Length: 433
Image (cartoon, rainbow, N blue to C red; front, side):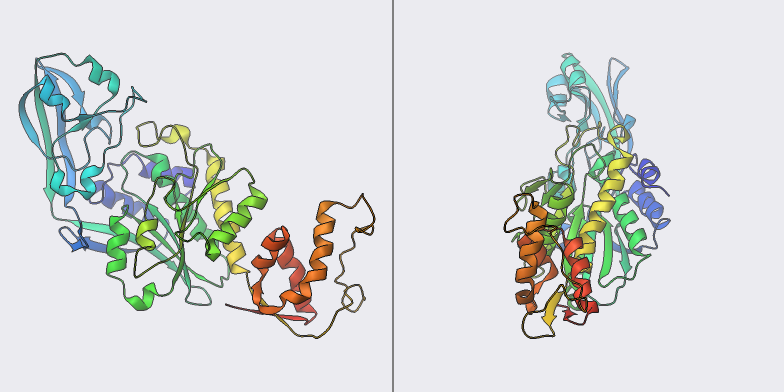
């Protein structure tokens, strides 16, 4: 199924960490990839995090004088997530205490999810357009909000693609935001497409796609996964907000210095130079804090198209999703992965200076004219000429292909292609870290 088609099926669902529609979303995803589904029972607790009960809205009406003022079931965001039931007559002042809205988008409905994670604060409440809020008259209102809570299981989708070694790179996206196309069903469908394409390749690394409720899914997955397995988790890429019309944004890992940071920044700098790069948690955060938490410390970046004006409102729908941006996001993820897949350290198999121009080797890249005397030599030619002077010293088993690409400002794929010729001439050996 095409990414946009899958997104259109999943995002309108009344998603929550545990809900009937969350279960439906899992079944839809399983039709795209053979996910293993991990289930965690309601009431389970880890470090203060609690798996919530299965929640569903049965009825959600606000009436005045018998007239229906607002039907909270008209949109998946119309009732605050995990709101309790309430039926009775309240004053306008009391009603307003149980309403949330967005002044910056007066005709839209805001996303309220605080009760997902703080169930002890749960109360009854609606999310309504601000323009409706302003029109509420004084007097009494009849509230009929019926929600159901019952024990269920939180489901975490896990698709594993084995590679030549056990070191695993994780892609993560969440599926708990009701009625939000870009945040983050776009990330989920991009992750599915990335895994489909990687499935057609012979990969050096193993890969995992995790689609789960934000924070809670990853917390309980890691807490219930053997250390022998989590020790193989090398890096994580959180994929979010990937379909709107904005440039790509890179949020770095906690240290900002891992291989995934360097590979991502290098790829984006050469292919999408208008990208934004920020430090850890400088943008709205997600599960990077879970993957990077003490005892795991898995370097995690996030890729997104933040900011966008419709964030956390009912305007986050398919109107803002651009198919070309979804495809572009897949290409970006695969471009970063291609660097990691082909990044090796280099070991010298010769001594002394090699005559690169000798036909025996044919490794000299001609600048066209002598770059030391010609003002016509391009900057790119100068880079390659300087590279050839330095290259033999990099074959020290401590310098990687990416290290060289970054140091010399030349795109990784071009450096890698050139170094493969050295390997073919048996001048260097590619070694893993």
